[in-house]
Length: 116
Image 1 (tube, rainbow, N blue to C red):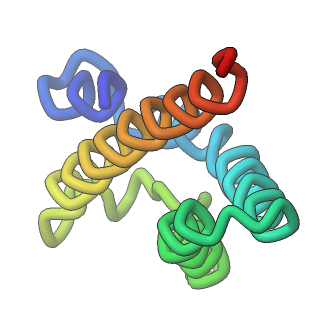
Image 2 (cartoon, rainbow, N blue to C red; image 1 turned 180 degrees about the vertical axis):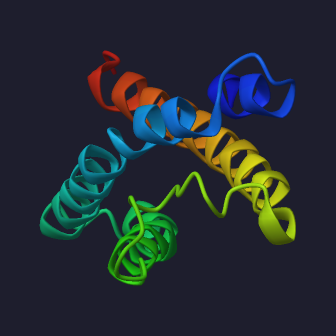
């Protein structure tokens, strides 16, 4: 969010912004896929079903990068067709999702380890 905001305010150029953001796309896809599979294996169905659409979206977004682009975030296209605004909106939605998941995981941890 901060990097996209810096690009929007012209504090950094599009190429450095996109290279910073693209560096984290593959670890995000792998990390979210691993968490989703772990929730399936541990039979946490609600959390699995909550994570599945986000993991699917991340994988789809990574696979559908046109050939010739630098990655999911491309400096030649980020200012075209409102892509910067859509990337900002997606980042905010993911931030909300990860905050929700953090508190759900924390609640599950505390409820399972609390003495009875």
